[in-house]
Image (cartoon, rainbow, N blue to C red; front, side, top):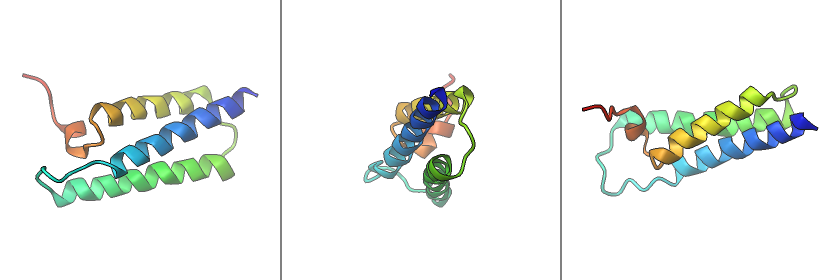
Length: 91
């Protein structure tokens, strides 16, 4: 029972992360090929991990769901901007 809950949480987090990065509006931003490549890899890996959990993975643990939640917070805090994820906010 709990494994199903953790699986649903992890899949929802990974799909939301991929959708947020995919829907990022970069019309007024400087574009860098490296950031675009990292965004494509992240979208593919989030979507691939979701498919892996749904069809192939053995029971998902609470730590998989927790890691998905952490990634969700990081992606949504940066508003889907890959460059902001790696930029230092320290003064």
